[in-house]
Image (tube, rainbow, N blue to C red; front, side, top):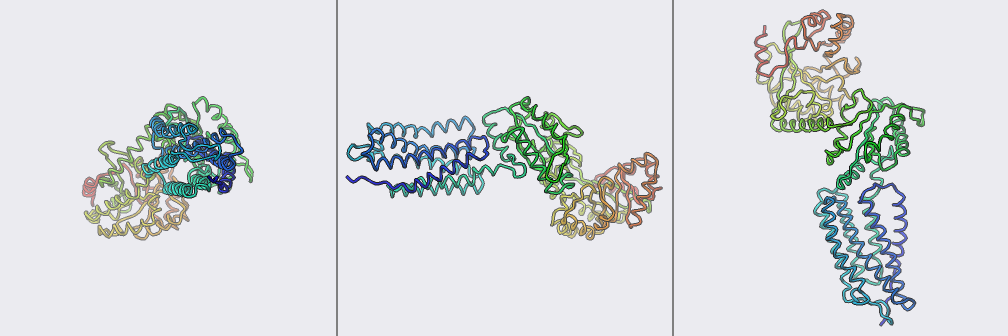
Length: 639
């Protein structure tokens, strides 16, 4: 019998690549999660397979130089590690897809490893049964009668891995699915060459290529690291806490963020803010380590700990450090701090919505005037309330049940109510009547405001079309716009289409934009200029609550200014009309009409008239009214 000469050139190349790859992977920061641990295990199993493949092939080539027991030992190592490679990658696929909880995962893992355990026993019995191979004194290595069981077991695990991926493909991204497809293709091609050319050791090279593809798409640690701070990002936080929840591990979160981050970003340029974030990130790593602090973007950080007590020292150091300036390339900058401690009890009540809860905390002003607070059940209640409001909005939008009420506006010149402001109202079957400030704010944050705003506008157009408002002395209706709406490039086209649909004259609509909501973008400002031309004009609401200057009002073609009720009440309570009068005169000099908001008493309306204000709006004249009550109000007050 001719002794087969194995060619292991491909395996030697694969071995060199594996050693470099493992060294690179070990040198990178990795999340402390099971997926990374199993992947690292797979790398070492692949290394063992390659070493065992080369060693066994070399010794089988020169079998006459070695003892029989040595040949048995090295070949056993190869066959067992070859099967282990497929088994480990099945376990990896299960981890990636999060297909089971801990108990089910253990049960499936034990069931699926049973064939591997049986196969190992058959390998160990080879000296007696010659199941997979046998070693003959005169001829060395020879295949056994059950040699093909190796391929059966390999394809069993490959099929189990494929089934796992297919069962959970909807949870996986397209890139991850494509990576697994290439993984399967490479392993199938590798096994084909191994079966077709058994003495050319090419399978190790194909396996290594499959591992590299998995690394590039799923295992690259840089995917989870924020570039500015060099801390793990929000996706890393989700991956870590998801596993902790599966393991029922108790932990708490310390949330801290740069106070007034958006303002700081406007004050400083991008380079300064990036340098500051980098400096903060470096300090955090030095004082807390890499694995326990995550960056959520926009100056927001989350540190995790096994208990509140475990985070006390870090919390104290963070608060002390933020009292000092941060040294960056250009000098020093100071940043304010707001923070909150989410205890283990709160975390345990919402394990699957933790990331959403943290974003909710960051987006809401929970701290108010306090630099540090403890987040308790109030946070959960407010988030649940916000969810319920969003659901109520969904129902109202779906059923088109949003109501539009109208608050009359009095004209001092004409001595009558010649205009009104359209105000939205929502009464939900579950939550009852809701304040506009609550559901409008949620609609803006969720994006529902786009659909909601158009429904409101259509109802106003329909109301104007269905009622002869001109005969009742009404010249036009004020319609409020959200800044989010004004970012919609289709806004003007949609509103023009709606006015045509309801045969509403553009001169009957005056749009209002809140001063605090103005945004410095080209799309926003273009929409304002166009809206000023398609309707009666454009009013600036709540003047005095923001920082809009006269030049900007001229650029936006503002034709009316509504002075914020807080400004009005502040000066009227003092009985000092000087400032208000000067303000009104300034606007009149620019041909702008002036409305005083928040008029609630007879004395206030007399003072507003004395200050030469053009129009007045407030509860002294009327509260907002439903459509039918507003029509009756006009009939009762029509001159």
